[in-house]
Length: 161
Image (cartoon, rainbow, N blue to C red; front, side, top):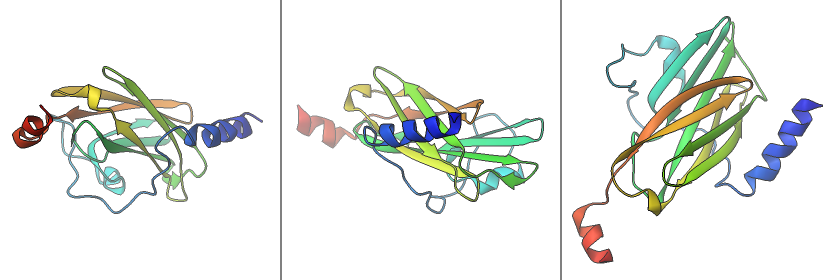
């Protein structure tokens, strides 16, 4: 019953968010958070940047973002991966919440590879270079990753003034 309630909540909230984004092939080389050791081979199965992985008993969780630096007024995709004893977990709900000057959230559901993704808008009001911490819950587990907002190039700023 709880799972049905979560799925219903995910369906309702998907209409008020940017929507679900099917994970695409990785946008480029993977990177880990700064000053951390190279990612383990299991982390290579999750696309994106700022990959953070954690083992909790027999559960392997990884989260990442589609871009390490995001321009305000654009979108960012958050990825989450869940495996138990190496077996991908299907149908697990991923909730994402982040806040800066404004807050945003999105919801995704893991597919048959254990990967979930959701895409959310980064409002223009988050202008300026700042680190945005992204909290991700997959099932009952919580992890965090981050992205940095970046200023638009000089020519874009001068044309707005």
